[in-house]
Image 1 (cartoon, rainbow, N blue to C red):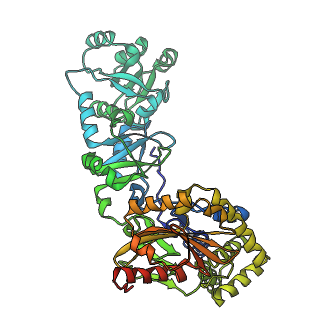
Image 2: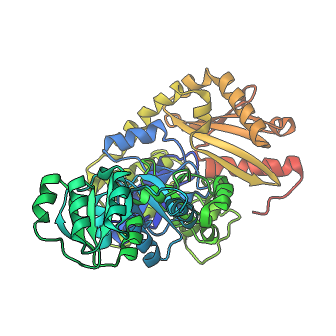
Image 3: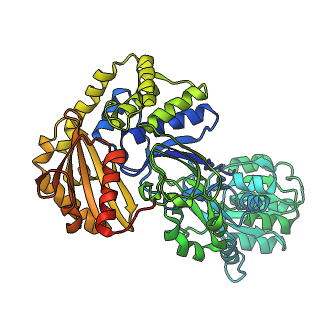
Length: 562
């Protein structure tokens, strides 16, 4: 009986930018829920980086699980599996497995255990090699077989049966000669291993049963001689009646062996999480250019073939809180993008198909998503409403940032009313948790909510963290500047910066490592080498980045036309 491998369902990921901030995470969670409510069942929130302490606190506060971590979208084998694999259970008959291959029009058949875990693969090369050994006239053929498989494959009528599912190595003896010759033949074998094929010859039937043969198989539908049933029961000899002639019965006995005996145990499967580029050589060398695919538990989930290399993956993407490939999870360009929901400037972006693109001048993507719930008359659960409120407050610095709009304020009031939260108190609660940022390693701080940009023919990166006081981070400026210097070197950046925003004093510190001429042109008050105080600067998107690009244009003498 074949085992039905699980099908790999087509999935849509709602995912924010690398190094996600709170707005990116909550918008992904909320929009995935909205899409599910509207009928896209396999729509799931994903994240392209580690959660910030602030985001962890918010998710824990409302008992919402974190989105699935997708570190990259570089094509993986599992992304190209559309249908579950046709498989054979290791204990089923070879005949049934071959019928399955013929019926399903497949060139390989994974062999699995009762739980669907991979054991081997049946393919025509392996079958031809193994069956040749079994029928070699110069060697005595030994056939591993059980009585259950014999009865099923031969479609035989059981008379007396013993042994059931026990598989034992047996020899086929055809009683086609005189009685004396057959007796000598059987005496030279181990009777308990013998499968005797005979017609309606009572002498052969009786002698075989008396000798303790493993089974007596009577061909052509002939009956067992009278009085021998009791003898077979007493000697514990299986007796069955095959509807086929002797040659056909002998042929089918070969095919009654468990499929595992004819399968290729040396063929190795590939993991669903394997990168496509890493399995190309293995695929090229595989029988029929096909490979069984297994999940983390070793369960077969599909077949990966050469034709899959040019197929569309079974993953679709909805981008939230970004629209630039430089900020997107690695490998995103390999997938079909269905929608973009964002509130940032437009990047240099194109798609192969028309998409839904929503870009609004608001302070948070969460504001847009909350508005879509209202527009589409969807249910805002208390948990989702609270997350969206947190996204608005964190991205607009409690509505104090220059990016905050009247739309953000109205939506925050609406969401706060749904969940009975005071905006000011809830905002302070969220940002008080930001004190934990100072305890993190320098590279993690630099990696939090980090975004890469391109302007004036150069690439640069700016990270941002919000804290209630900058003192704890300022004393670590040496380690932070060293981290920025390392990042700049590793990624060949024009400069790398960290914006530390104080939500209490409503100002920021800028730590930066970059081109010396560029650094000297920064007009903000300098606190120390590589450290500048940016009074009244709260928004990276609307305030800091435009200033930095303008400065780059001056230093490089190149206009940024984006």
